[in-house]
Every structure is written in C-alpha cells, then in structure tokens.
Image 1 (cartoon, rainbow, N blue to C red):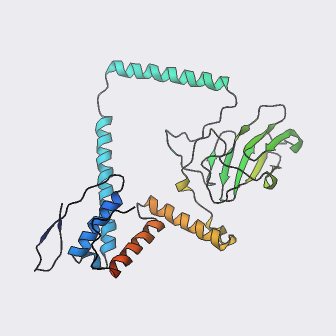
Image 2: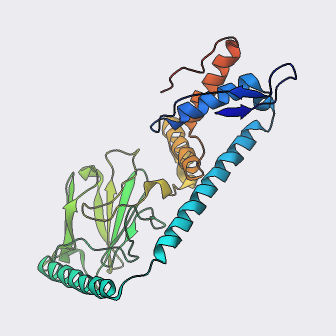
Image 3: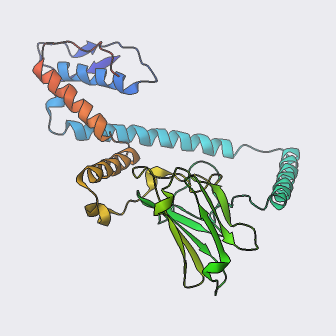
Length: 292
C-alpha cells in the first residue's frame, strides 16, 4: 500500500507501507495506517484532522450503502418465469393455510404486533415496548408496565392475576388467559402489583430485578425490540443516584455514537490513551504491534 504524505522536501514523496489485514480486527489495521500517517506527515497535527477522518468514514459508508442498494435493485428486476410465479403463489397459499390451522389449534399463541415486521428486531413504541391486539407493554430501566383492555364495567374480582419471579398469568375468570408466559428477565414479586383503571383496563406494574438492562421482550415468544432504539426518559435522570445516572448517560451516549457510526466512550478512551502513550514515547515504533 502506498500512502501519499505531506512530508518535508528532504523526504521522498511516496512511502511504502505493507500490513496484513485481519477482517476480525479492522480497527487494528486502521490504527496502524494512522500511525504511519502521523509519523510521515503533518496531517494528524491539523485541527481539522478528526473531522476530515470522520467525513471520510461517512463517505465510505455512503458508497457502501449505494453499492448494496444498486445490487438489490439489480436483483429485484430479474425476470421471473411464469411457472415460478405460479409455484410461489401456490407455496404462499399453502403456508398461509398452515399458519391459520396452527393458530386455530393453539389459542395461547403469543400475538404478533399490530405493525407486522419482516424479520429482525422491531423498533419499539413510545413506551419502549410493543403494542399487540390484546395488550401492550412498555418499560423504563426500573419497571415494566402492561396494559390490557377489558370490557367496560369489569370489576377487580373478575380478574385473575398471578405474578411470579419469572412468569405472569393474567386474564378474566372463566375465560382463556390473555397472557401466560415467562418474562425476559426476573422481577421482584413483592414490588409488583396490578389494578383496574376506569373499569376497562388491567394495568400490571412489574419491578425489574436487574434495573440496568432493557428488556428485548416482555413475555417469551413475543418479537424482540431493538434495544438500541429505546428512548430513556431524560427528565427522570435527576431522580437516580449519581452512579446509576452516570451509567445511564454513558449507555445513551454509546447508543447515539453507534447509530452514527462513531466510536463509543470506551473506544474514545482507548484512543486517547494511545495518543498520550505515543506523545510520551515519540521514538518508539509500534506500527507492527498487535492491538486488542
């Protein structure tokens, strides 16, 4: 690899640089490249160096997205034979019929969310949970709330609700349970309760055992949410103790950095330590060093 460097006239205009690239550790390769740039040019001494590097990374990501988009568009316009269309249609009808039969045979099947997603984690609702036809759930770091609509005029004596450390059963007496499944993680049963709101809504409040973790689902079998897209209630950060608040703020910062393709707080700290070490040891050659 040849890197064009902004060197003094006494030095050659081209510097030969060779290194092996490990796909499992791309940052290690990138740091070696930056080491060479720092030694052989004045680029890293510029005040705008970091911004220019970030801009280059964003441009590379944009080119990658464009290439993937063009590849998908090219594949989508591939002609389909008439027989293949008919076969796909028949297979789809068979799959739909099979799903309907399974659903009819299993009344306790966990419902799909109102907004059906193809695959992968789902973007959470405003309460950092999901909405289903028969119930919805949301969460913050400390608690999970489940809301279950019931016929207007329902009394508390008509409700059956059993909250255990790892399982929830709730419904109306004499009817099939609305929810019956295991939690994503443990709760504190003594700090959990339920009540009837306006005689038309069962509200269940669960206190998490681990209050530093976002749940990916409420009851086992539900689709998982993308926990990187949860939105903590920043207005309540002041109610937390200093240590917990610092952890939450760090987690929020790292989530934003990941979404923008930027380094996390831990990665920034490691790079700062490396810069300080290089500044204190200017004569040491670490271009061939292995980084973990």
